[in-house]
Length: 199
Image (cartoon, rainbow, N blue to C red; front, side, top):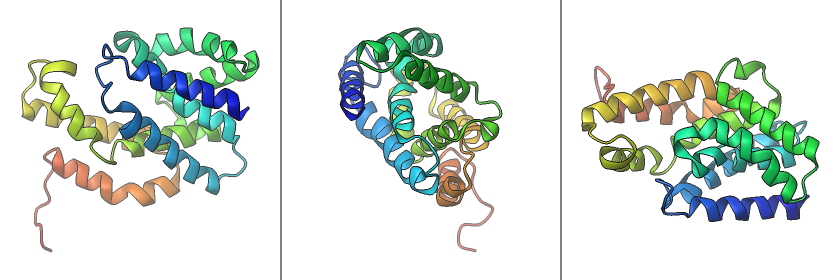
């Protein structure tokens, strides 16, 4: 299994390095690898989860975005299972991983989803609060991802994204406790300032 997972990760890394992908310069190091690290820590708390399924889901959850940014969700569902099967995964495992990503992408009732979905969803939401993720989105946003947007408009968009991540993606209590201060800080960066700074 580990050889197949390594092959899939190598494939995703290669696809993410394609200059046609808007985030090709940073996406693996500053998103996918961080999602994987957080997910592995959550696996320590939830040993009943399938670690192989979680690892594959980490590298599958943005696969469609990497291949076809404009059609990311449908592209994952279309391209994910055949690629996993091509790399030697059992078809039922490939379909389960993709079905779980579809649940994750729905951002609906994630707290009632299988634990593997909650782990990857929480890790994904938390990863946006680590490193330069949001700042890089802002940097790219003015001319690539969201052309014509002002800094103020990008701040409003990032605040909305941060709130959506926090309220819909980050379901596991361990993740919420660990990342609560980061979430509040990110909201400040997006313009939601406290009444007082010192007290």
